[in-house]
Image (tube, rainbow, N blue to C red; front, side, top):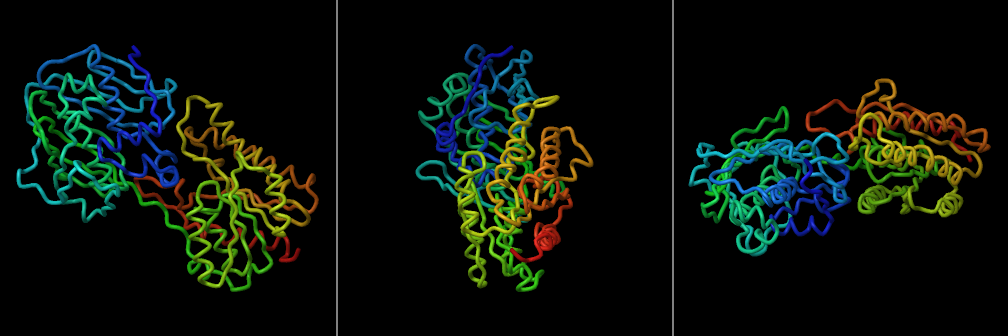
Length: 477
């Protein structure tokens, strides 16, 4: 039975960040968040939990101790229409578009309080929520996490009661404050910046006061990136599970590229690189620049990254030009004029949305349309805009077409359509030569995973392609 529909706005994200003290950029910064998880800011997991409990407690008021469990299966995005479903007498599920649950919640009356309790002397690394809390999360490594412990001051008072009135009425404002502090613990303290909340088990005592949340890492498993933390605030005790996620892939350096190419190897290339702020686009820009060519790197949101690439290249006596351009909203006439002024000889097309996106079974029409907008419609427009004489065009496909995976159905179908378009375009664009390659897994933000997997370095992956592209035009205009 549906009991509520939740929607979160960026303003809601900011408000909960202030309440909980969790200012992790994965929730607030669109540019930083695109490198991890869902590729966009995600809703705080504890915010989802508290909003769902607030809807449930509007007409349910259990007595005595309560054990709250929550398993966070998938991230929620601001703007999602999230249904809160009562799936049993003591079970809730949060879903989007009737897909698999985002969060599964269990509620049990519990008269025992036997959860592990951190030692009273566990005060190292103290941080307080009251006053002006830190807004920059800690970036811990495994050796810092394994024996970490500390305590957090709680944001008591009216704010928790105003934000979640029904939870506060049933469980107390201090309980709300303690649960909200779990978000700060995971997102700001431990694991910190590179983290995802996985699950909680919380024993709540409604009549117990609380002023601080003590915590201690009980287990840290580097093989799976998993961290289990025991917590105790007096009114809320239990365990929190989180993942330490891989750090964002670093930008390629001009030194790394220069060590693999001859100084003038790509001197005649004037390469338009659509989507070159990070990943294989950035690696391509560095290779072209290191080889003496000039890349024109376009970006939609990664202005800071492109400035870093250009500055790094300039320090080595190389040149990178840059241009803000979004293939979804930008003017392709503007791109055409820029390409003509630039004298483009090569076009590398790396514009893409997030690949591992949430989808509906068995086939998500909206997701497929998004992929085809990038890989078919915008690609065709880009080729037509840049073509003005001899031009080598690179369209990156994927070995996922050779080994289909259900969760990539729409992506694979759109990439296959892009391959077909790439084969059909040259006759309509005189002087254009097309190169299509199905790339294996490459170490980028798109392919980051909690469990380490083999992936090629983007510079190594793109070097033979940049060389082949250079041969297509023969190094001459």
